[in-house]
Length: 243
Image (cartoon, rainbow, N blue to C red; front, side, top):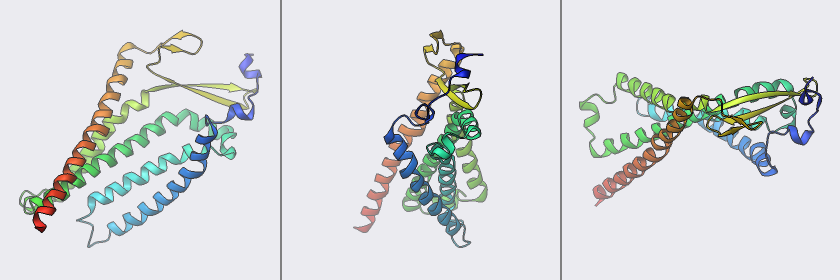
């Protein structure tokens, strides 16, 4: 029998937060924000689905859905900071096993929301500067809307899929299988536990590295710049029309 299986972890060692500040934020602040966010987005979604507004606000409806998914995937991370769940073997086993995938789905929802905000800015800009363009080219047709949603979902899913493979999860039992702990090791780590060499293939490490850079570029940097420019053009156009 291994030493780790015999050894029992202390309550402090079993905590899933690294410090008190993290425990306070995830245990008290974020749950409140999640509840407010879920309630607000569900109300928005129901209002936006009303028949008179459905066609004009379909992008906002999709954005509300993305926000709801994002907040839903955040819930397990907040529950993990409560003692009721922290010391529960079943919860720990499920949460620690799927934590990386939960983070990947959370980032997928976040990335989709960013791209939807980008298209909302463009929709408003085109509507103000070229009001007849949308009708003339059928940009606002049902097929166009479905194609755009599919494009956003597939693109952001592709941009975040690498996160499912970014970490290797090593589960370790303690205290005669009554406690469980996990190590989430970055796939690109040079040295692994026990001073072992990283066993991951070189091509996989390079793939994760380049996907991380592409994600930063296409989900964070470029959309932010375009959103700022689109909003600036919208403000300039509105000011020019009010003169």
